[in-house]
Image (cartoon, rainbow, N blue to C red; front, top):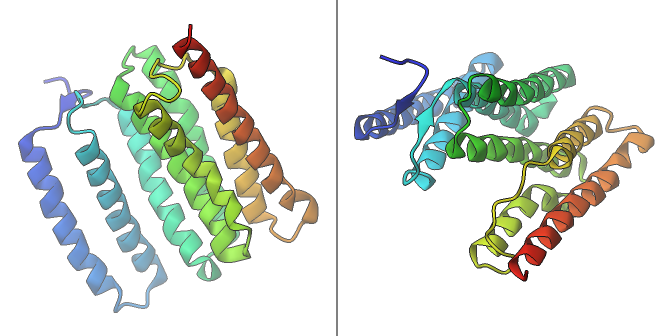
Length: 236
């Protein structure tokens, strides 16, 4: 049996449902506990399980393969779930923990692409999974700035650009042609994550706070660039 690749079967879906119910019970129990470490573990695992199950549900019609690069992306999803719990309860945690987890997530983001190319295990599911996990981290860090530091709600447009873009593609306003691989697009994503992370970490530094505006401008430019490219291809 090839353990580096397997498909999700009906049995797997049943397992996910059972696990979610068990984790929900654990979450209810954890709410009565005061141990912060146990609380963050319980809540993070529940959030991860729910997000992963929803992701599989929405993409269940795809030929889903879980291979080594996808497992790496999955570890990032677990880490991002921990980050979400931390930003919601930031008064109880050290910002160094937030910084460390975000840097690990970014490192794994670079690794999963290298692994997929080295092992020739690139899949359509893996590409979408990677992009969604990237966007989830952007959403969490943007939400943290609004929730913890009273940033303008405008910053939430950064993670939602992706879904505006997908809706425009779905209804053929800008064409449905697959975007070409772009180093600029990937680096924009990484730079936006780093900028949002720095805004969270150095929240009292006025110079760093301005990265918030730079992030919006950078992602807006990338978004517009891809839209124009697709629109032109549609009308050729």
